[in-house]
Image (cartoon, rainbow, N blue to C red; front, side, top):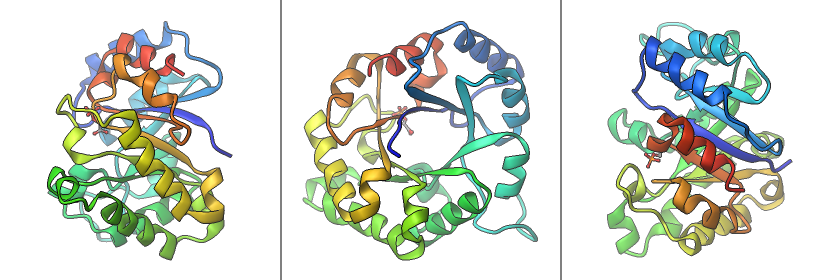
Length: 244
Ligand code: PGA
């Protein structure tokens, strides 16, 4: 079923002390009961954050997962391991990983499968570069990224994932896609997913702030947000979640 979600991607930020302060501040806030709120700290802090959160209104997610179940994959973390630390979500194929770790569409689909096998909801990220948008290739780039998921996941598996559309040019830049630009891509993704489309929550990501969230959330195919920078501030993150 489509659910409203606001996911905080802390990226490579935080420390034992900062995490404690941020989670402490988040626990003082009230979040709408119809919105699932997720925080994704760096892997090493998952046990700490899972312990600190320790409540139903905030879920914990990871920022990446191995494409393999276990074995000789130095530095990787298996989905089964994430599950041991109460991880309910995992971000997969973020554009920073696609760029710096050369993750392909196939790898992203394999990571989704590993997460699903362990009852962790993958949040699969797709998005185009500025150059691709300027060339008018946005919809074809996104379609190729979505097609890789459709080819490797069953319809039931597709229904269980979350997809985040994050234009690369909008990530961490202060530039946000207009609600209409975001809606156009979200509608195309939902259509491509065919029968699974009506069940999949589609998030928008890229410089989401309290000031622009409400307008984005009015769009019919936008079910929530993947938030980077603004998720490190409890007031901003809470205001975004309360923008529905
Ligand atoms: P941003 O990051 O909100 O800082 O643009 C979003 C993301 O990378 O998920």
